[in-house]
Structures are given as C-alpha cells and as structure tokens.
Image (cartoon, rainbow, N blue to C red; front, side, top):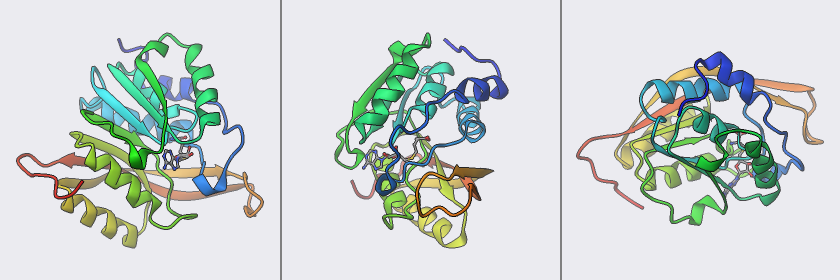
Length: 217
Ligand code: SAH
C-alpha cells in the first residue's frame, strides 16, 4: 500500500525523523536531510524499485530511508544498523506509523551480514571521511547482495566518482548520477567549526547488468 502520493508529502513525513541520540564520529553518523531522502526514494519509486519490492537500507541510522521506502509500498524493508541506540529511536518512530509491520530492524555490522535476495538497496553510507574507504566498503556489501538496483549517496568529486564507477564495473553494475543534492550537516561534533556544513552529493543509481556475473563476493 502506498501511503504518500508525492515527493513533497514524503519529505514532510520524513522531516520528523529522530536525530541521532548520541552521534558517533567513528561511525560517521550524519543524517540525510528529508529533502534528499525523499528525492532518492522518489527516484527509486518512479523507476519501479520500491513498490512491492524487498528493500534493504544499509546503515539505516534512525530510519529515514527505511520509513520512506515503507510509505512508498515496499513489501519488506530490512533496516540494518550497527548502533543499537539508533535502532531503538528508529523503532519508536516507526511505531507511530501504519507501516510499522513491513520494517524489519536488524542490529548488525553490514560487512558480515548474510542477507541476500534483495530487490533494491537504498543507503546513505559513511562517506569515508573518518575511515578511508568506508563508502566503497558499503558499496561492495550492497553489490554482493546482488540486488537489481542500488540507490546510494556519495560525495561528488572526480576521484571518488572514478573509484565508484570502477568498482561498479568490477561487480557487473552500471553507475550513474541521477541527481545532485545539497547535503547539510549540522554542527554535531567538536571538530565541526561551522554551524552547518554544506556540500554537494550525488545520488547514484547502480543497475545490475543483465547476463553479467558478479566478479567477487
Ligand atoms: N541512513 C541514515 C544514516 C546515515 S549515516 C540516514 O540516512 O540518515 C551512516 C550510518 O551507517 C550510521 O548510522 C552508522 O552508525 C552506520 N554504520 C556505520 N558503519 C556500519 C556498519 N559497519 N554496519 C552497519 N551500520 C553502520
């Protein structure tokens, strides 16, 4: 069942996402703003990748992408997160909605998860600022799940674009930037100097190529 009927309406619901209760810099716990989250999910929905699909949200945080996918009619949403404190907040929020029953919260390290048979992955992974390569690690995990489509947010710069497209090729996926968004990160940690840090991100779509095997797992 689809509960929202426009990207704007979705954004409005998602603007109520809880904040990170105890933000952890080592896990790069930066929230996706509701506009970018709604944009990513709407793009996925319009391409037929959400409605009645099995969706995994890797590093779900307090659940903004998971709840959005559920509101757009996903069959099941696996809301996967390493920090149990975030998952508790997410579940409290989900319980206020009518789509609570489709979301399966899983506290796990996605790098060692055995989850398979996913149609679509949505994620805003760590950007790899604190731990270099964390973004690519998440992408590897997502591609090893062999979904048809992956929607993921990444910093927009030529070097990371090159690494991302090479990795996609290796796993038999095409990679394209389907939208550019302004990411706003509020001052959360002591080392943040500005009240709000703004930068450009790309919403990437990775599509599994037909008849192409996955090179590695
Ligand atoms: N998807 C959320 C949070 C993005 S921040 C949102 O869009 O708002 C990245 C998230 O990945 C954080 O919540 C962090 O705790 C989680 N994370 C980092 N490493 C992880 C790992 N190895 N396994 C699972 N989750 C992880």
